[in-house]
Image 1 (tube, rainbow, N blue to C red):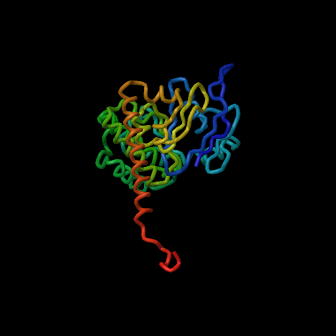
Image 2 (image 1 turned 90 degrees about the vertical axis):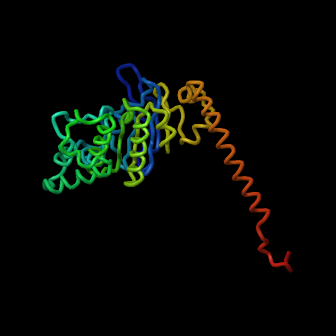
Image 3 (image 1 turned 60 degrees about the horizontal axis):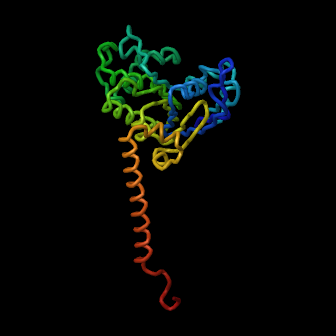
Length: 281
């Protein structure tokens, strides 16, 4: 679990994040969304320690990351996996070498043990037998999956994904979303996703933090977002007429499910046999 408590960040006389708090739990996909300039990227960078917040605290499983020494922060960073927006693969290294890079940096494992782990994570992202390929030989979706494999090779407790679907077609984006969700559940990772992709919001948004001009404007999950009455959120998520119609249809669908569940409960209550003996009724 990651807790963000009253984070504030300024650059010069400009406040970019103002008193933002959130709780991001393990085993779920925690999304940070918002328009460009809303502060979501700065918030993520504060969470991983790339920026030092001017106020507030970031806690990893109860440990105050912002109050740690550099040596202590390094230990926490060993438990963090990062999927960068452009995958950030080394062009001159093979897939195998790219994924092995964190193992060589943070472990003293033998080459065989590192190679076994590389093959294990490659199989997990469905890229068996791509070890010797170079990034230039891969499609955009394959690069993202290599990036995910590298991010999880150290078996992290925390996974940060910066715009994981950037530059991908809708079908490939869906594949990446589902892979991130599966890995999050499988390894009980606290996953934090910074995204503009509204398909991701509706597909994997267990927890959603909506940022607006440096403030936490709204928080909830992918079901609650459908019924939200926050106008700024609705204008951002359902900007087009098509998406507004989709929202209306989903609201009707969800309302219908609730109505059906209530009707079923009423029928069960009505038809259920009495548990009171006849002579006591």
